[in-house]
Image 1 (cartoon, rainbow, N blue to C red):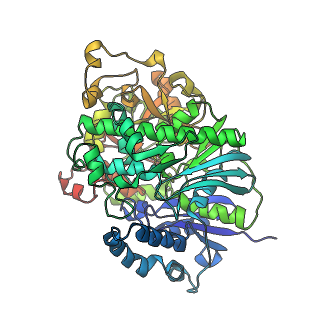
Image 2: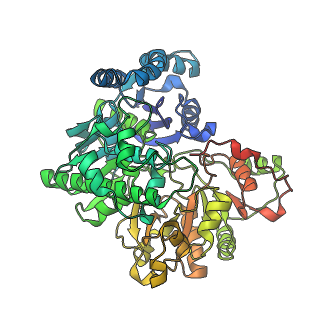
Image 3: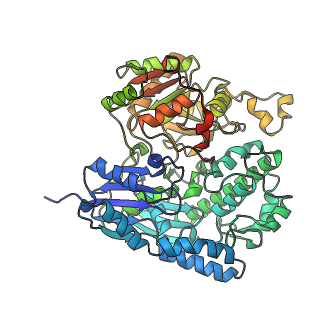
Length: 614
């Protein structure tokens, strides 16, 4: 009998470290390190994530056939050196700040990794190490799990070793590279430059720029096309590096950029003005145009009718929605962990299919298991934890619990919802979520300001029964990973009065846009998650009950955390977050906790210093 083959993929040392374990090609477990260490975007060696993956399979390090790292450090080092030389002497400061880390850790990554794994091994030995290229890992992470036998694959991010944008043809168990655009020309870094300039944090605030965009007008698109980016008809582009500082300095933009857009970057945590909204809208529209042109030319050149997307830019769900709506491809699949964390999954899959040549079986939905790949907790474990914390709860059976929760939601309460396996990737999908009634006009501001402690303009997503999505939104396809934005149908919209039309920017926030005001963005759009019984039975049942009670098959779904905190992982994390915020109820597996019944805890806001704001 053939013995099982275990391959562990890891991403580490840049941002969003993660680990993923395959057993004979099946994804057994995957998780980001930040969920265990409680440090957002943790980039350290993913020791806790690795231990979780090994526990899930009940194996130890010595039983791994291979460990696969998600990029090639020597190639990356070559890019840094060549960049510094090309821009000398301007790059010296950035060179001197990067080199100590490279010379200490990254350049000798192989020996660093061997030492780390020997530390986890009962026999102090290290498994065989493999390395994929960064964009190869991105491409593998999306194509090999997709429901397609053959597909075009587009990867767009900041930068890997050299590539910033690449196109591939995936067929069966192979990936064939078509072309790439190399550093410093990067649509991801262009977006990050505007993230920095509008006062948000690079590598974590890009989605805020996307959320802010509908409040603005595209006043600066002409300037961007004239001075910053030379975009060709086929979607290929070059950046004008005179305006950027990321190749040589420690910031994204320079004095010339600031002069072009009329002043220095916004100070973080100050209130965004109409200017920031207009800048956000402008760079968003340029990004959409680049992605649309690339998608069109990929389709034209190959004739292939399916598209897979990955890389950090593929988390731009507005642009994804535009590609889908344009009907360029029959079907589009986007990797739910499109950023660097997904590189761990891609590295493992690349080794399994491309290096070892195993045959691939295509699954009808996809082979991500709904992205529920993290830890889960039994009712016994939850009970022990809640008792230890002195929490007061009611335990209900399956079926009964959904009925009770639907009622609680209908009464306008906000619920912390913790069940099943934790999600892999940046989105909460009903495993570690905060949920509410989307028909409730106050829900968006209550959730933003009293529960998430974050900016009021940030939109919320609807979770909707998969079979009823087309009754509310202009979308025909599945969107299980909340990575596609679509418009709310005309029949559910509330048109603005002439006076409301005159409102500017954030003033528009409090004007209800539809019969589901809590999830309808100012431009009548919504970031959709379709919920499927095959992947999340419990969440699906809850939506069914809510629909039965209210005639509405939609819930507000946001991630279970406060601003700056990683999504909760354990029942303790969930209880702590529940008690610190103004959530009304907490559900952990089959236990329901009412805030009013909990022991009184001194109100102490000093914990807010615990998480660095994102």
